[in-house]
Amino acid sequence: MTVVLVINSGSSSFKYQLVDVETETALASGLVERIGQSVGAARHQVGDATYDRELPIPDHTVGFQVMLDAFAQNGPSLSEYAPSAVGHRVVQGGARFFHPTIIDDLVEINIDELSVLAPLHNPGALQGIRAARDAFPDLTHVAVFDTAFHQTLPPAAYTYAIDHTIARKHRIRRYGFHGTSHKFVSEAAADYLDRPLRELKQIVLHLGNGASITAVDGGHSVETSMGLTPLEGLVMGTRSGDIDPSVLLVLARREELTPGGLDEFLNKKSGLLGLTGVSDMRDIESRRAEGAGAAMLAFDVYIHRLRAYIGAYIAQLGGVDVISFTAGVGENSALVRAEALATLGFLGVHIDAERNEARERGIRRISTPDSAVEVLVVPTNEELEIARQTLSVAIPA
Image 1 (cartoon, helix red, strand yellow):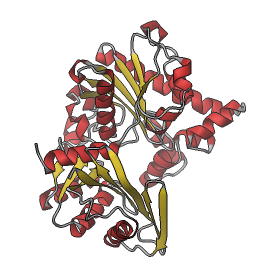
Image 2 (image 1 turned 60 degrees about the vertical axis):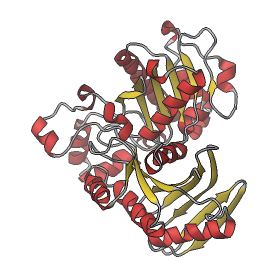
Image 3 (image 1 turned 90 degrees about the vertical axis):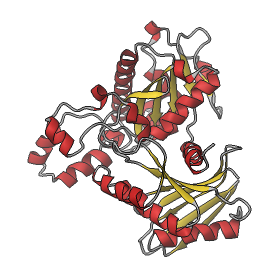
């Protein structure tokens, strides 16, 4: 069988998907959330059917039993579609993990130690890993790290210009995130164009509530917008992206914000939400169309940052062959795609308006036939990518 159970776990929830890698289909998916609260919630989806439950879910171990009950009651049967392995998304692999890694006790210790670099993500992933290993003790468990694809960044790209002794002591450097998505999209783009991955200079824009852009040269990440944490880079739904560090000092003094308060301010109360009161690009576009000044400014700020990064990455790559848009905003906002590339006509980048506006599923070209650069919309599939990578080490060829 080529079936993999993919787990994406947080501190109070986990998502799962049962993936058939051979057919590239999701056999079932679900979400277990509000773990540790008085009443938890579980959703299990099979085809067009959705099954919801509310019940106490005190910890991840109980959560995994709820998931197993959902498979038993609503299908598909885990006996008939027995997973060959379990793949776990882990956000931060530091400079230790370059590849999908079979999880043992030592790997768990390493993930735990790396929590200092991702305190909001790695602890939850570790809880899910431990619960999953208890639930599936006979299966191989594999960690797929969000940062792994960016381990090819050159030192000039990942080094911050601060005291090198302090940086080394605290492992402060740029790690990058969304690597699983950037890898999937850049490879899918090469397959779609029927061109060798090694020959392509690509820019991938993963634009969702969290957003990042990566320069991919010959299949390798050489520059990316997120840094030590997912806060750096583009304007996002609730994150500020790039900001003068002195702003933090000013806010700490004048607003009496603690480090925790600053963290919440920049990660949860900034970005589009901070500028407009809403974080969804669909709401921004709707308000902008109505002439709302805050939404118009927020959209302009968002696009300004996108253009700045695209231009910088074209310079770093020495040209570009393919620009791909992915994730919620990238796949669904024709306006964002058009405006992000509107100033690149001098490089021969031209979008076909009709193709761009078309509401089609699947990978598609939105550039004109005479465009010097291929512009694509590539739906990301991180679960499939995690499943592929999991099988590559759990059942090596």
